[in-house]
Image (cartoon, rainbow, N blue to C red):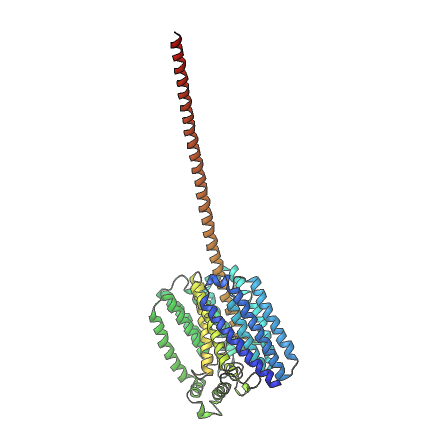
Length: 502
C-alpha cells in the first residue's frame, strides 16, 4: 500500500509539473504586458494553485516515506509561507508580475523539498533563510519607487564591490581551493553573491547616459578589478559570471559586435591562464575530461553525479528512493543530479524550462523598461541568473567542468538564496516602475483627450451660440422689414382712401 501511494503521488507530481510548464510557456508567449496586467492574474492564481497541490503531494510523500510527524509542521509552515507571500505581494505590489512570482515560488518549493530530503536539519535552515530573504527582498520594490538616486551612485557601487571582494581575499575562509566566504559575528556569508548584484548596478549606472569609448574604458578597468580579485581568491566560477555579464551589457549598450568578440577571446585566454595557474582547476578539468580514470579520487564526484542522472531516467525513482548522499556536496553544486535521480528527467526538463522562462521575463522587463539604467540592470540580472543556471547544470551533466557555483533558488546556501531572491525583487521593482510610468503616460493621454474633447465641446457651444445670435439678428431684420412693408402698405391704403374722398 505504501509503494502504491508513493508511486501515485510521484506520477501526480509529474503531471502537475508538466501542466504547470505547458501553461507557463503558453502564458509567456501569448500575453503582452497589458494582457499580463488585465488577464493573466487569473493564470497567475491557477499556477499558484498548482504549486500548492504540488506542495501537498511532496509533503504526503515525505511523511509516508519517513513516518516523521515533523513533516506535517515543516510542509505546513512552507504552505503558510507560500500563501502569505502570494497574497501580500498581490496586496502591496498589485502592478508586479504575478507570473514571475509564481515561477520563483515554484523553484523555491522544488529546492526546499530536495534539500530537506537530503538533510532535514538543512531543510529547516533553508526554510528560515527563504523566509528571511523574502522579508528583506520584499522591501526592495518600495525602496526603488521612493529613492530615485540609485542611478547616480555608480562609483559607490564599484567601491563597495571592490571593498567586499578585497575583504574576502584577505580574511576569507578557504573552501575546496578557493576563498569564498567569511564570518562576521559568527555568521558565515559569501560576499561575491551580493557583489554580483552590486556589480550590475555599477555597470548599469555607468552606461545610463553614455556608452562611448571613454566610458567603456573606465568601466572596463573597474570590471577587470572585480574579476582579477575573484581570480586571486580562486573563485573562478564567480569571475566567469561577472565577465560574461559585463561583456553582454557592453555589447547591448554600444551595439558593437567587436566588444562581444573581444570578450570571447579574452574569456578563452583567461580560461587557459586559470588552468595553468590553479591546481584545483586542473583537477576539475581532468575530472571533466575523463572521470573514469580516477573513480575513487578526482573523478568520484562527477562519476556519482552521472550515475545518479542515469539511474533516475525519465520518470525518476521517487522521493526518498534514491541515494543522493553518495555525491559529495550534493546539496550545493550537484543538487540537479539528486533531482534527476529522484524526480526524473521529465521533471528536471520542466524545471530548466521554468528557470529560463524567468530569464525570458527578466530580459523582457529590460526591453520594455523606461530608461537605460533600469534596462541594463534588468538585462544584467537576467544574464547573471541565466549564466549561473547554465554553468551549474552544465557542470552536473558533464557538459562543462564543474565551477563550484550553486543552482539559484534550489541549492542550499543563505548568501545565494538572499542574493537571488533580491534579484527577482529588483526585477519586480523595475516592472512596477515601468507600469507606473505606463499608467502616467496613459493618464496623460486620457487627460489630453479629455481636454481636447472639452475644447471641442466648448468651441461647438460657442459656434452654436454665435449661430443662434446670427439667426436672431436675421430674424429681427426680417421682422423689422416685414413691419416696414406692412406700414408702407397701410400708408398706401390710407393715401388711396383720401384721394377717393376728394
